[in-house]
Length: 338
Image (cartoon, rainbow, N blue to C red; front, side, top):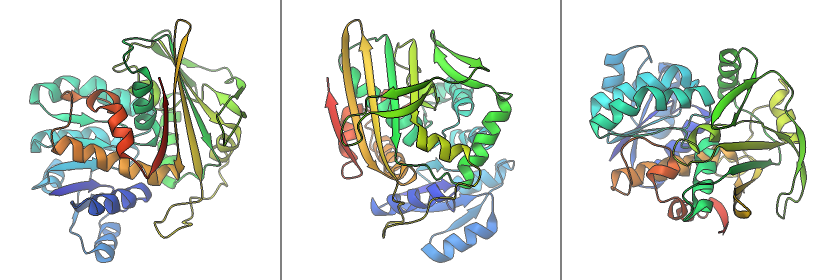
């Protein structure tokens, strides 16, 4: 089956293309830059279909004959809506890897009704940020129907952001007018004070680390979209937060034959209800590279009918979270305590 990959020539897009091919799909390379698409097509032997995001007819041609589309092109505040609309016109499922909080919130708000009415599946934030945390929180919840708090702590050895990450961050920063955001009392709150500095008890092999509290990622949209948890807080190791804040931090550099960087991660999710606590932990390598199996597994499950709902739905709602996470081996190691 053909799967269109919009933004196929980007850093994450290339990982997604490779993962789809590994699973037997035929990626169709799509995106805004015809020159970059032609180069990627020459390197891979795949078909290239240029499609400016503001050209609906070109987007329709890019998706023609595809069974699904994966949007890897940020900023998603610009690309998500037009590509979702094209997917709905084509009658195919849509998956993206958006980490932008506001863009993901827009997808839920704008397309929940149209996607549900069409019987379509739209899965935003099917990536390291937003998707993995949601799957872990959902798996940790197990048979709980509600919880008081969810804490998602990101233990990164470092963070070399891609140009796409920086561009998306700049768009989000502008939309917030420089404010930071958190999810508390059942809603997004925008604040101008400094985030708290804390110490998080990561399990071994990482161990306790200094973190920035309320370093808010897309999980504050995906988790409460389907789980009744009024307090969802995310944390980031200080070293990674500093890397992201420093404009001189270089982009990722390949360190193995798969193109992955040397970056390692540990995502520690704790869900609390009353006096009880449940935990899920995932470890792996390269946050951009691991997004590829997350997105590709989502596409494979949607196309084979292994879904729980239609409409706009986060990973933890549309898929069996624990089963999905186990299917990601050997890309991640999973520990689930519930």
